[in-house]
Every structure is written in structure tokens, then in C-alpha cells.
Image (tube, rainbow, N blue to C red):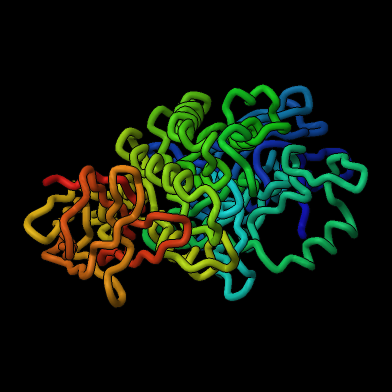
Length: 484
């Protein structure tokens, strides 16, 4: 792994051994800067300048076709007491080379700098990425990652590396039960032995770049097996000893603003004790991110947890899933991508190839909200969402909203079930078919029990197969009252 310091880069050129200019802060190779609403990033550089007091500092920003208009050796600062600072406004795009000089003394500074959008990756293992490291998403020169060791690098799978993270909260315990950061030979052996680690962050970023041509910087912060309590904003003061504190620290290190957050978590809260409180804790977390980053409209896109090959806590699993569905209707600038129909690479983790599908679903959500002028984004809807279920004779018509085109399924429609007032499944559906673009008709063989409800995706390992024409899946829902 290539390790580079985020805080110190000193590439200097001397003039007769007397005058020296160096860059020490503000930008490093491969760094991605969050652009503002005008499409610019205000980059502030700083450094040392021996024997150059009072001289002007000039900056040149170059792309593949040479210096950018208006940024060819532009006076941007001045040396004072052997130190200098300079500011330059750089437009969306890249990769750029930024050079600094003072008179005849120049310091070729940094390369492969991008200006675009920063996306935080947070949550537990399915966001950390546990897909098999085979046929993974290839890297893209316009997608970089601020890895967990706090270094900017080209984004490659696996994005997350807890063992050598800068923050203690991610470290593993050694044989003595003490937290320890992997380094040197031990780290190299651990990295070489990894067989899993593919996630949805890189395919999401690549898809967004394909659609918008805006560079992306990913900020991986997820940690497998973690609960909402471990992500509590109340632990902000613990900084790198807490998940939320570590994430905010990293964002602030990058300038304090990001384009949005991608979140995948909930499996660890699917228990009788934690599930009832899940929705409030989740919505409180979103509110905290927006408050602490001073971005009240911060986009927050998340995944509804999918399948788990387990017989425990079935109702709690569905309770978390439906809480996630309801939260989408109450959180502004948010969106949910279902995962219940996706194949796994083990008993609980979405597989590498299916993560690419899930990433496209997440990019659809972000695209429709943030890039409405892009043709491919302008017509995207969030995907089918249940409106109501009405009994009419021997059929139940289930109506959906926000469908992209028509709903479809590979083979026989599957995933619906009817339950009595106590929640027990009652086998009544003998046929299901699509009717028009936004309805499913369920044929029932007998009279419904009193207080009957409809569910889709009941249990932890259902077979669900409904998507729309943009491959946006129908989420797990229920219990939904059946109107009679």
C-alpha cells in the first residue's frame, strides 16, 4: 500500500543553495476537493520560503490541455517571515497539477488533484464491503479515496481497511486484549490474505462519474457488526474513539463539507430490544450529521437491509426494514434502496456482482435529486412504493406509486403473504399478476381472516423478485392493512 502524508508534502527546488520554496499544507497528490454551489473549490495552500521575504507567490493550475484559463501563473499570495499562504479557486474537473513559484524559484507541487463531490460511506459490514474479491469494480481515474489511514489514493477495492485505520475505534484487539493498529509486515500479510472486501462505494462512484462527469472522492468510514448505539452522535466528543466522532473528524479534516452520505446499517439492531427504537435513532443520526456539518439539506441515501440466512428474530428483522421504509417518508433529501432481492456471497452479505446493482440503485436516488438537468437523471423515480391494498371479491389489488415504467419479475411473482391479526401467515394467495404499470392483483382462495394484513418480504430469507424498468426493487413492507 502506498502511504502518503495528508499533512506534509515538501517538494522543493533551490536557487544557488540559498532560496527555497516548499509546500507544507493544503493539498497532496490525489486529493479531491468538495466544490461549492458555483462549481469551484477554494484551495488554500501554505508553505515555507527561505530568503524570499516580501516576494509574490504565483500559482499555476494545469489540466491535460495545459494551464486553465485565468490560472496560468496567477499572483495568489506573498511571502511573510519565511512563510506564505495562497488561495486559488479551481473549477470542477481534473486531474490537475498545481504548481507554485516565487520569481525564479519554483516548487512543482502536486498531481492528480480533483474537484468534484465527496461521499461518505458509513454503516456496518455491508457498507464496509464483504463481497468476494473476484471480478470487482475496476478503478477510475476520476474516483479517489481518502482511505481509513487518512491518505488520498486512487480508489480500488477493497476501500475499507480497519486494521490500519487512523482512528482507534476501528482497530483490532491483539492476544492481550489490547487495541492495536497493524503496521509493517503484519499489515502486508493481512492485506495479502484478504479474500473479501468488495463494497458498493466504488461502483456507485463510477456510475455517478459516468452519468455526470463530476469527479468523486470517497470517504470510507463503515465498520462491520456495529449498532445504532455505537454510531450515536452523543459520542461525538470521543472523536477517534467513537464511530460518529471518527467520521466527523475525517470530514472536518477534508474541509468540513461533503456532497452526501451513503448508509447501510440495521442488521445489528434487528432484535426485540433494539428494533422498536431503531427509527428514532436513525433519524436522530441523520439530523446530527446535518447539524454538525452545518448542512441542513445534506443528502442521505441508505439501503433497506436485505436477507439473512437465520431463523432468529424474524419479526425484529422485518420491524427494522419497515422502520427504514417509513423513515424515507419523513426525512427530506433522503432515499432508500431495497436489497431484499439481491443474491448473497455468504449468509448475510450482499455479493460482489449484486453490490454493483445496488450501487446503481443508490446512484439513481442521488442522480434524480442532485442532477435533474442530466438527461439520464431527469426522469428517474425512487422505485415502487406501496400505497394501499384493497379487497374486491376474491382478489386483492395492491397499488404502488413512483414506479419507473412498469413493474416486472423474472418468473412467477413472489414475496407477498397474508397474515392474520396476530401476525401468523395464512396461505391464501394462489396467483399473482401485474395489472397495468402500478398494480399487482393477488388471487385468494378463501375468505380473509378478521384483521388481515399484507406483507412483502416477510421473514429473514424470503424470495422477492419485483423490480421496475430501472431495476429499482420493491421494498420489504408490512403489515399493510387490507381494506375491505
